[in-house]
Figure (cartoon, rainbow, N blue to C red):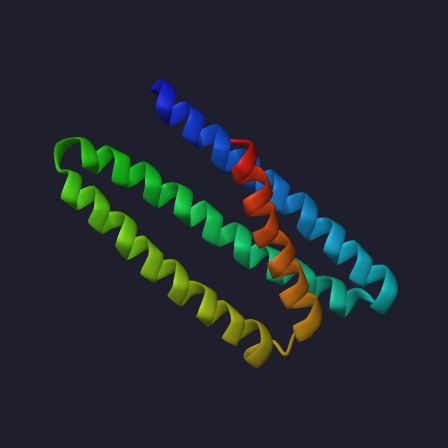
Length: 125
């Protein structure tokens, strides 16, 4: 693993760990205040963000590998990854609130907290 690739891997791990901690805090607050179902809803919301972040890391790694040989192809991989993550998040919201009937407030609160974790951790990288 090259130096840049190792830094990328460490940065993504830091972001995911920050998101995990914030998700668990949000889930614990909702669990204590409102019960297990709201706590589970918060876990689902945070997990959505963490899955999207992991997906982003994989796409960045693939784009950097492909970009060495063909920079435009690396960019295409990144742009297609953005569209895929957007669709994933929309579908995950539909499944969470529409199919599973999870509580919207805890789900959205943990989703937002985990997104904030992305900003927090990314600013430290």
